[in-house]
Length: 340
Image (tube, rainbow, N blue to C red):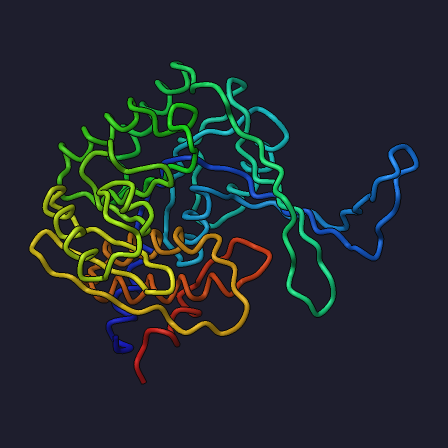
């Protein structure tokens, strides 16, 4: 990609309006100083002293964070949090981000805030080391009243945006945002506006999703099609083309160290190798950076290969950010994608 194309594509980002629909959570990092370890008088067990706490949007919020980092002009989260302390932190973190509007983000006492508690051992001159997570989830189905509110929000916001990025983060679909009722609403939106970008990703499965731009990793492709995750790129490309023709929209497959692959309904495929590893890595958030960059680039006129190039670079930048779920800015992307 030359400098002119990079500027033309990324220069459109501030004019974009995007909705991010799905399971938002709070990433709470608890930084532990091992030099301050004590022993509990009551239990005789080690006490890990937390010297710093960081909180940021996670799950679908990680996609949103990456859109903010790219300079997308207006972003509308569609999801829920609980009427609890974690919900307060999540809303505050979202509200602090440039261009984010919370008009369609529901806070309700009927749900708890999905939270990833991430204890980190932090020592000078060493990468952070994450201990066992302490997660908080919803274990009961999302109440019908909450679903109805979310559906109404989704139908309203769809008319105000250029595109929607959809992420299912919960293992049990019934407990999250993307219930069958929300997927039905997405199907209606796609039918009424066939030219509107809808990019969907789900850690559980995209099997029952309406036609959209599917983005998934090799394991998720395997769950959807039965094709082994270690299949050759040629076989993965053939499966991606079949899905693209079925949905009449592009399909993107991330292949970890083997790079990223894209396919169109017309049968075009592109496969880019992963960029070289430049030190220690942490893969958390890499897929969400891909989703954000694909959506922004495609809405801004990027070709299949150009969108893949930007997404591939973003994931490489993100995996080298340790102790956090990272993002990639346009300034960070430029040296990785612009040929001198």
